[in-house]
Length: 171
Image: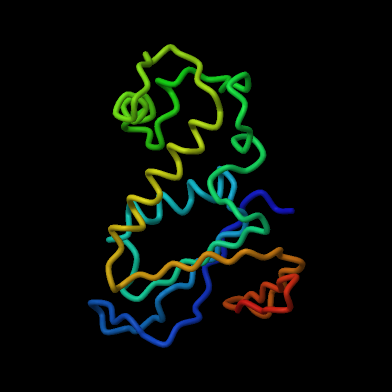
């Protein structure tokens, strides 16, 4: 399994015209792996969606049924705590205390130096990503694909084929 890989391809039906008059197809961004790394790539793409060309597509592929968790945050045990204080676990570098604020807004009384159970971090990630997904507009689409990547093939400089265990091919 690949922890996280981003594929920017040019599969699209609509084209974006630049100021110079040149047209480019909007990207299809495929993220392989829905654990922490893939989820954070998705979060930051959504957070900065205004920088993406109109009609961009984002696809995130993961063989498990739950995104955001990965192995590190899938535990439900209170005994499995983060190895970094909560005050340094915010999703964005300009807001490192975001996790602490989210915890306090959701019924937990914590300080920046506290070590928190890992499953709560998964819930935080799910919450912030869900918020960004709800803010999507008609110019950006997202597709979650529950499948396993079995092969990635370079077709040429501009095209990559991603083969899935189900037999589906993503170009």
